[in-house]
Length: 496
Image 1 (cartoon, one colour):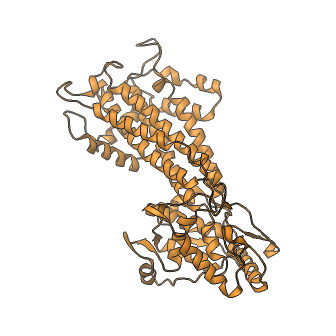
Image 2 (cartoon, helix red, strand yellow):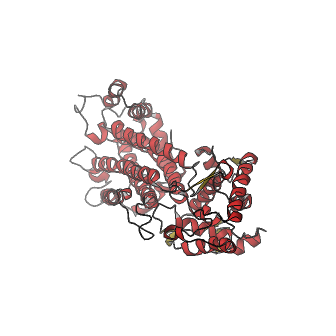
Image 3 (cartoon, one colour):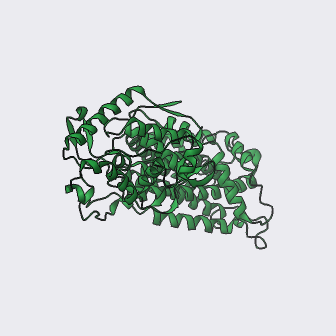
């Protein structure tokens, strides 16, 4: 059981809820804060005070006063009108993460919603009813308005949900689980959709995949070092301590451990004086990616526990302030950084693939072919890797540098954070496939050199990988091998 407080959600708990079917409960203390905040909203409605989004319209309509009898209709209209998402739906796991993060944000007690609304979000989580949420349509400021409106539809029994591996009308799933749709009350529609939970959910899942991939990139690069008889001196501890970056030194340390006992690596001057940068600079390049991953994790952990609603209610309603916590700029930048950092893992991996297959750069069979000329071997695998790397370069263009005014120029600077998060997620997927290709090629090269000469840890990786991708004895449909390695990496451990 994961207890949500609005203040203490961590990656370890998110993983349990998303991947281990852990149930969720709201903390009693946090629910007391929610009740106090709600009382303040009810007082505002009763006194007909002029407060944005409670007794006024939204965006450019913030100057339009709403009559007391229309306050609830205002919230339903908001959800209907803002549910304008288009395109393919987010993966179901992203929808689940959005439910979790929105419930946690509302539990901070600054949003003025009823406990009932938070309990409904948690009901959907625990019953695994996940709203169908289109991926496109968010500007990443004023919150993820369109995506979160589709999430809110499920609470009122509208729209569609994923339920028991099928897409069904929300009302159908709610009825089967004995859950009653709710009628949104004052401020609740606004509280549901003013937030960064779409970009943050995508960011959390993208980060978790990227972190695992960064570890896997190290064992795969180590295997390539053996296949190319790389010079181990470049990973000496003193070199990396001398520069001062902790992450760089840690990558070098892990690779030294992976290659401990190898009789395939060489010393400087033994075969050549220096290796190419794609081998020699692995700690520097991979280490810089780790620096970025740490930055991204820090920003996501703050946002996972952030109040991103507007207006926010403080001091039991004595202070109600309109601000801009819904603006996604911190996550937009973090997601752009994540995409760029992971794209670099693919860039350097593809260059190692080239060194593994190019007969002018090694003494292995050309293109690792079992019968060069008659059989092409890994020739076109490198093409595929190059194509993915090139696609990453276009996806890595920062989304956060763009802004288009909206709501009649009232909302005149937006973050595009959800676009950044979607692009980063695609870059992670592309990079996984590039590293899968490097793994296939490096296993082939290392076996040509002699499996008995490999380090124990890299040999363990190779033997596990061989359960899904056999040694290449003849040309075959290599897309199947790439796909098999890709899915095996998803299941395989991050570290060896």
